[in-house]
Image (cartoon, rainbow, N blue to C red; front, top):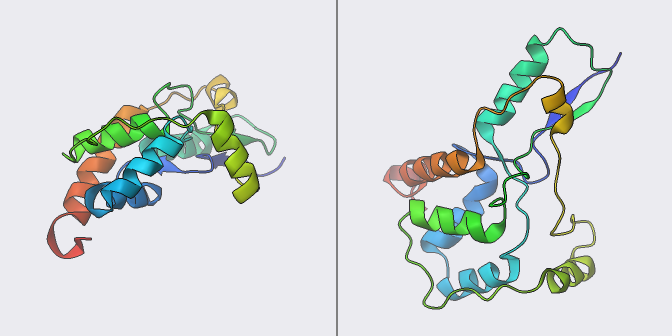
Length: 171
């Protein structure tokens, strides 16, 4: 045997306390609108590789409670099968949930080939912008997702609004 592991992918989970989304939330809520517009245009089609935090926790519980011997496999929790798991759609959902006004002009998505080339030059250790992760191994083991990406984004926005935009923790 060996140790099994459950991974939410490289960009982590989305939901309450989803710290990886704090940067995007802060940029949308209080950041420079022009920089946000440029970021939106540059990364519009980039895969986000997010997974709902509740699904990650549920997958860990599933693995702990399972009687099956998994022989040291790594199980990925992923919502990459959801078409809206990309920067542009997640950004729009967060803007809607956080009541952030849209851009004066719709972002002009940079072609993925241009973004891929820039990323290879500037950040060669980063995954390509089209990279997706597959949770088939976990599903085939009997696990069922408990939270969809859209719900995770809503829960993150609710948490962000109360924890970061109000009260003593305001950013």
